[in-house]
Structures are given as structure tokens and as C-alpha cells.
Amino acid sequence: MRHAPDDLAASIGITPRFGAGRAAPCSDREVAILLALCNGGRFIEEQLDSLAAQTHSEWRLTVSDDGSHDDGAERVRRWAARHPDRQIRMLSGPKAGFARNFLHLLAAVEPGTRFASFADQDDVWLPGKLARAVDALSKVPEREPALYCARSWICDARLGNLHRSERWPLPPSFRNALVQNIAAGNTIVVNRAALRLLQAAARRVEDVAAHDWWAYQVVTGAGGTVIHDSAPSVLYRQHDANVIGANRGLRAHLRRFWIVVRGHLRSWNDLNIAALLRAAPYLTPENRALVEAFAAARAAPPSLRPARLRRLGLHRQSRIGTGCLWIVAVLGLF
Image: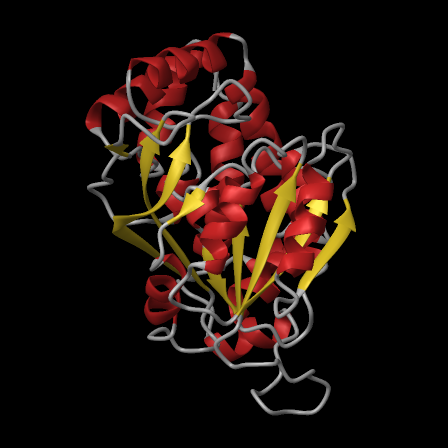
């Protein structure tokens, strides 16, 4: 069951396009880019240069510096001085981790913004990234929450050794989002309805495991649309300072195994469920019930967990991945 677009729009405060109480954007196709910065001086100027090279040139940038100890913030200021035609705003972050920093950025988006995009400090955007996202999102009815995401070119610190991120065979859905994130934050762009939805949901949460996974869950949970583009949109650097790495290759599999063994996956699911329950007014009735059933299944005796999760239709993007899900559920690591 999906929310009626008008009902959901009213619940998250969306007014008619030119209605009273709404600040007019500078451009109806302008994108608010939200960049979380923390000790990112090494690569930040390359990322900023890639923003300037976008074929979709209608954007403004907000950077939230989360207590950097390097010269990253100063590099942003110098870059801004060299580009006086660009709207660039600097904020002080909450100093509570990358996820909270992105939620802080969401809260700072100006009223009336039609599109918003997350940005990492060490990537390089391909020139058509924003154009593809805006074109795709513009085809969705304005009152329907929509999230665009894409594949990446995974590379080393010098932008070499390129290979594509995984291609997801199954369509995005809430039943997938509960147990897997396929929306890489450095590729995410949302429309106005999704932005308002995420802002409203963020005001209710205390913490989230990861801003991109949470966004995927909230948008699908509210009955919105998720568009996953099979064409890569960014060069995604893999280096020692990455908070969360790519999802492909032996190194990624070993990292995921370690995350599960150390109990981090279980903790992340605890955070996700708590955040979704707090955002329950914005979820469809069916998906509210699904979150509650998911929480109950995790608390069931170990031998019963796989069957209960299977009955709920929860799945990862591969049969092997879903099978591993049942195993970690039995072991109490999920």
C-alpha cells in the first residue's frame, strides 16, 4: 500500500508549487549539494573542480566541516574565493560522525529547494552526474518522494585501477532496504518531496547507522520511488581514510565479514529499526507493520529467525547474500 501523494505531501509540509509560505528557489532546476567535510584536505579541491565541471551548472554548495584538523576547510574557502560566481556556504558540523553531519546538512537546506545531492569529500564526479539525476527525477510526479542513485567507478587514491561497482539485479524496495543498502550516498540526489520527507524524519531520530542506507529505507518505506542508474556517476576513491569502502572485491567481502563478526551489523540494524519506528508516521501502514514484524523476527528464538524473515519477504540482491542473511540471523549477529 502506498501513501496518496497529496496525503504524504501534507504530512511533511509540502505546499503547492507557487503556494503561500514557500520561498522561491533561484532556479527550478537548481541542486543543493551537501558536502560533509572532515580532514578532507588531500582531495577536496579535485572534488570541487569536478562540481564546477558539471554539465548541469545550476547548483549551490553547502559544506559542513565536522571539526577538521587539517587544511580542508581553508582549501574550500580558497577555492570559493577563486569562484566568486558560485554560491558556497560553510557550516560547523555537529562533531558526531559522518552520518550526523549529513543529517545536519539536510536540516540546513533552504526552503523551496527542488533537488538536493549528497557529496563526499574525496570523490570526483563525472561531468554528467547531476544532469542524469535531474533528468530522471524530473520525470517523477513532483509530490512523490524520489531518490536517484547510481553505480560508481571504484578506483585507487590516484584514480587508477578502475572497475565498476556492483550491478543490482533486483528492483529497489523496502523489503530489500531493511537488510541491504544499494543507494551509495555519494551518488544520491533527491527531489523536493523526498527532501522534505527526509528532513521531517531526521527531526525525529537520535542516530542512524549511515545516512544513505537510512535515506533508502525512509523513501521506500514511505512508498516513494528509487531510481538506480546502471551508469556510473562518480569516481569513488578507495584509500585508508575512507569511512566506509566499496561493496565489491575480496577486500570488501573481508570487511563485511569482520563487520558481522564484531557485531556491528546487529548494532546498525538496532539503529535502523529505532529510526524507522520514530519515523513511523511517514511510512505506509504496510511498511510500518513490516518494521515491527522485522524487529519481532530478530528477537525470536534463533532456529525460528530464518523462517520468519523469509515469510516477510526480506531479501538481499543475490541468493547467496540472502542465504548468508539467514545464517547470521541464526547466529544472532543480525
